[in-house]
Image 1 (tube, rainbow, N blue to C red):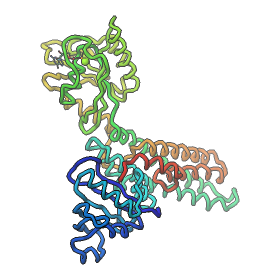
Image 2 (tube, rainbow, N blue to C red):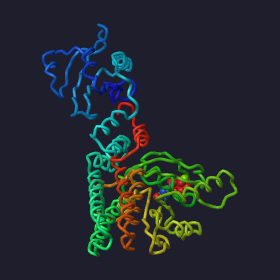
Image 3 (cartoon, helix red, strand yellow):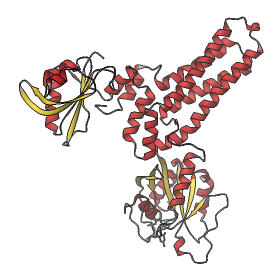
Image 4 (cartoon, protein in one colour):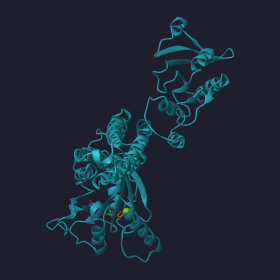
Length: 453
Ligand SMILES: Nc1nc2c(ncn2[C@@H]2O[C@H](COP(=O)(O)OP(=O)(O)O)[C@@H](O)[C@H]2O)c(=O)[nH]1
Ligand SMILES: [Mg+2]
């Protein structure tokens, strides 16, 4: 981290302003070679967190009128001396300033290098760093809230508390190992068991919440299925609020899958509209239907659309039986019903009376989806939820090690044996926050950031 790095932090292209970020030990020297402040007196005081108006020039040539923000180590984002130059938003303007920094000894930053430096300087842990990417790419309120909570350290604290718990268990074991086996009495073994169980319970609780966390972050793979002409494409269009899919009263209109994402009740649905399931001689339609069956397999949520007043078909029953857990039945076209019974649906299955035409049922659908995501528990996006696949899979490994440790305790195995499992659990939990990581993992994580972040 000897180098001083520079990058354009704003998106390439013509805009109102561009921001260039300069960070590293030489940042102050480099900026002073190119920046002529309007108030030299104020600039020279070297005060932190100031914004200074002036001229950016290189080799006696004025390149732009700029605002320079100063954030000195260790109080900056990276923990190093950082200068941010706000210049006019021309591609050419920003490029010339960037070139000038490079000429004066800065190096072009790699993707995520500012955040990586922040991590290496202890300004962020890995959970917080990964939350930055999630915040930038979030597309719903709840995804943004979740990422912000992780960024502000809510989840890190929960993981650090767990790590602390595991460390205490290890210390307890180490202290006991020093005594010959028969002097360690049953009391100690019981105490140890209680402590390990307590940590396991907390880990399991976090893992439970991760199901919700992952959905809030990545959305729900949702497929809309049903017979032809029940109103699947109409439902998709209504959810999207646009005429995305072609709707006609001709069965077999939708043949290929249509994919769109939409936020329903703060939850991102990755929607797939499919070809209606039926018997057909049409080759294209048949291929479409095969895709529908495949989409059903992988979906996390199935919206099965049926028509009010009609008995269920064999295919509809089959879908219900096979995917009951993840299916919500939408009984559409209730506007056409007079006295007829809505539909004969098995009692245990949840169904919603619906009319795309009269805009009925949408609120209930929203509530039902939320209920499934939050699983009736008091989980909200402001709770410390774990949502990142890397973090979830390591926490699962940690849980397994703890469970093995617990079973060793219960089997009365020697203390040095069970310390192996607890040590392994410590190793895993430390990888989540980055207390213990390999360089290759860091590269993998930070290379997914944008340049300038
Ligand atoms: N009466 C009534 N007709 C509807 C409703 N929703 C859709 N339709 C009509 O049903 C027909 C088939 O709709 P479409 O969305 O193409 O069905 P899909 O084949 O399942 O995708 C169209 O003529 C729609 O206008 C509804 O709520 N009430
Ligand atoms: Mg359709």
